[in-house]
Structures are given as C-alpha cells and as structure tokens.
Length: 207
Ligand SMILES: C[S@@+](CC[C@H](N)C(=O)[O-])C[C@H]1O[C@@H](n2cnc3c(N)ncnc32)[C@H](O)[C@@H]1O
Image (cartoon, rainbow, N blue to C red; front, side, top):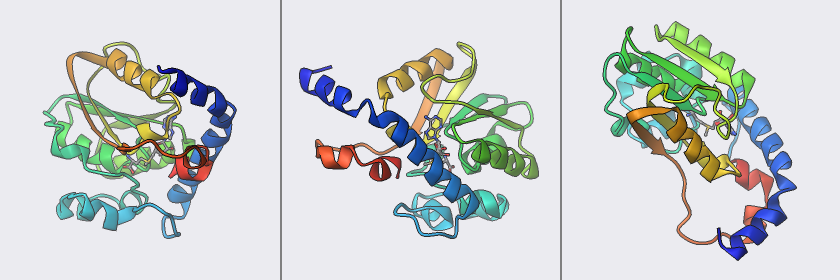
C-alpha cells in the first residue's frame, strides 16, 4: 500500500461500522420492498439490461427477480458444468444462485454467503421453489465461512465493491477455491481516484 492509501485507510477506519450498517439497511430494503426507489438499477429491468436470458427471468420466482441487485452478468463467463460446487458470494435474494443451480444440476450444489440474514433466508426459499440445492450461510466476504479448497467456482455480482477490505476478500476467494478453480465476478471499479467526500459517504458506498 502507498503512504497516501494508508493515510486514507486510517481516516476511513471509523467509518467501517457505519458503512456496514448502511449496507445492511440498504439491502434489507431491497429484500423487503423491491418496488421502492433506489439509486441503482435493480429487478427485472436491470437483469434484462445485463443480458440475463428472458427464459431464466420468467422461470425464477418473481421475488428473486424483483430483489435482484447485481451490476452485471457473471453467468456469461462462468462455464459451469454439471456436478460443480459453486459459491455465490453476496447471494442476495438468490437469482444468481438459482441460475447457477440450474446449470450444475442435481449432482452439483450452490452455497450462498451473505451478510444479511433476511437475504439469506429469501435466497434459500427462492432456490427451493426453483428446484435448486442451495444453502446460504450468513457471513462476511472478508471471513468466508467455508473450509479451504471447498468450491469449484466462485460467482459474485456487485458485492466486492462494498467491502472496506478488498485484498482480504480476494485472499479469501483463493483460500476457498479448489486448485484449478475459477472466478466469475462482475463488479464496479473506478478508473479514477474518487474524492474523499464520495469515498466517505456511507450511502454512496452502500449503493
Ligand atoms: C449488490 S447485492 C448482490 C446481488 C445478488 N448477487 C443478486 O443476485 O441480486 C449485494 C449483496 O451483498 C451482500 N453483502 C454486502 N456486504 C457483504 C459482506 N461484507 N459480506 C457478505 N455479503 C455482503 C448484501 O447483503 C447484498 O445482498
């Protein structure tokens, strides 16, 4: 890390708890009131914009589609095979887990991890209604509640940008992946340094 990055990390340290609270609040709202106004794309409109197959969106439970809050389409490059074990990091209301579950079939399985217990329970219910084997663990991407070398593929959609500790998250992903495993991640990156007023705003961080 550079000195400047360290200085900012120190300045931002007290914000970590505030941001975690805002992230929990924001995605609780998406889970419970997806019809509300959010300053990010969500629901079917977002999924169609990112190239999700209309057939998937018709077949998935309406609640999983309505609370979808991804930023891209991790299924375009995941090349999932029948029988694989998939981790959906930040699984939200479960749409990505369900689509992955359809691809890995009954011999495979999907493990969700999400900070928000409401999201986790919704994802499991939506997956069960879709005929997908999925268990969601309430937990943090910075400390993934899975053993070393336990998954074939990690998918994640719009989640890592929410972390204060992105290097730790990447280390965790490589820890839980089996040798030769794969990552298919869609996320937000900034091509330029954002101003501190943007970086330090919990609402902007959480969205
Ligand atoms: C942009 S949404 C993910 C969308 C999801 N992939 C979908 O299909 O709708 C972000 C998700 O990440 C979860 N999340 C945020 N911070 C987290 C953390 N530190 N560890 C695990 N999950 C986290 C949120 O609770 C939320 O469900």
